[in-house]
Amino acid sequence: MSKTDEKGSKKAMLDLIESKNFLSSINDLIKSTGANITADDKFMPEGIDNPTESTLNTFLRDKFDTIPNNAILEWWTLHGTRGPNWDLLFTCTINGERGILLVEAKAHKGELDRSGKRLNKDASDNSEENHKNVLKAIKQANNSINEKVKGVNLSRDKCYQLSNRVAHAWWLANNGIPVVLLYLGFRNCRDMEDGGYTLFKNDEDWQSTFIKHAKLVGVDKLVGKKVNCGKSNFITICKSLEFK
Image (cartoon, rainbow, N blue to C red; front, top):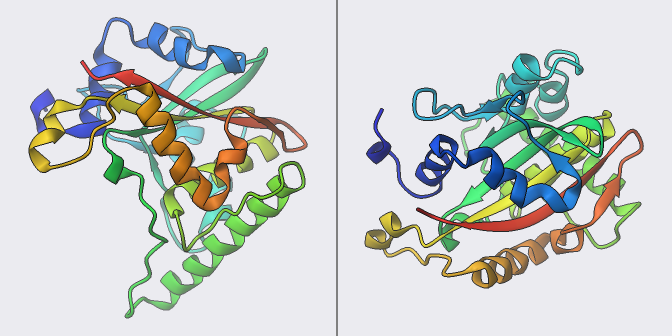
């Protein structure tokens, strides 16, 4: 696989992973949270030679062995074998405890998807049951988060991607794993210009765009705020990097 096979946020993420400043760049982004990454930490995808994005279920099984196999998948779906893919997953240390960094990356404004989770009209019984279970999981996370931060409105049917990211961060923290959820905007991804996409020009542009999107489901109230989930906590942050 060559670097030209991908565009936008996926290419930017792979280029970041391959860069000599990868660890220091990530640490600069998360330092305000008390999190730190070293060369001994594990991450997925691993770079150009292994560019496959991972689900949390796979990552927990292969890189983080404190959670029973398939526990997060069984919470999310009744009949599936996969959960949502992540742009980058990283083991880390958060305020002295072993934790996980979850990264969702964006290269243009169109990637901030407002849509809900789709269910085909001819969906199987299993797909319909999964659809209902995802709603149940998101509501569970939302109700718990609202005990600490009022006005959050995670949804299966609106801003599903953002909602499921926060819900998974909550699940990990509720099961004793501290989490940093990083929404990462790559600025000036010129390889996307020919498609008519609106790029993030600077950090202020990215921050304001993300907060406007997050407000649709109340997630703006979580940005920069540590949420205690009982056994542990999670924090959502919004940062940007110049695409090079």
